[in-house]
Image (cartoon, rainbow, N blue to C red; front, side, top):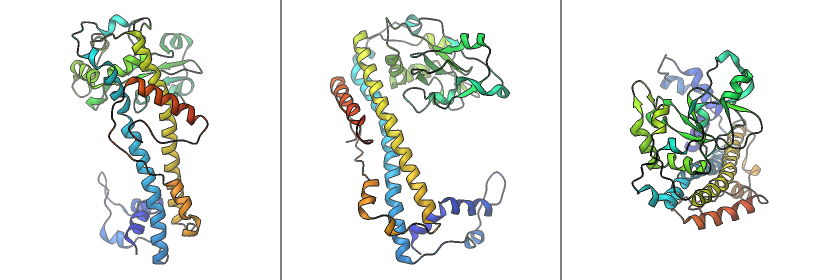
Length: 342
């Protein structure tokens, strides 16, 4: 048996199912050597095992590369932010976040679990992580009275902070509400901030409190007991340097174009994952052989991404680059290259 073929099988759905059935114990599940020895393993000819393993390993490498590129690009906007506003952050400012608010901060709506299922979309804490702007396509829905909808409604450009987290780094995470297709609210473990757009651009505030500078300010005001929390007062008193508004708006345009690229990048990752799982399923049902996947097809699916350390570019170069890439990708197939990842 080819070792890679065996490893791929044991991590396939069929292999994992056998592991789950054979596992014993309570909180710590265990598979014994005897149980492992009794696993049923498909055993095609050795040469065919090698060919299948080669196909799946190439596809797995594509999947891992796309996932890794997505992780690295998370740091890109932080680099651009510091390149753009670093000089302003080094100034001794006395401005506080409360000075740029249009309305007072507010916690969200509390609703019992049994009232969720249909109705008005509600943004929860877990919707604030892992994206540049909140993904509103899969929000929970709750049956809310109109008075609650009116009180806790969010609009495009509103900012939401997480109030608490079991993990310290999860507290005070910030995200921005995108353009909405229907009335949407937010729940009680988040804090809404609506800024005065004559003073600051909300995308600048997003970048500010996601930067290492902003995260340090937030962690200074967070309290830790069983959970780490930050309240409205702590957020109001955060230092808030205010650069010229045109520079803020230029950064906002970069963020918006970058998010369009990130959407395509996430779709590329999803496609790579789907491809790998499909081939894995076919391989161990005896439906995949080397004739199904010639070298040309493998090379198309296995585009290599040269992942380099992200290097900050000047705001002008970034804006020009993103403008070009967005225009290209509106008519071309999904590209995986980003600034610093070519």
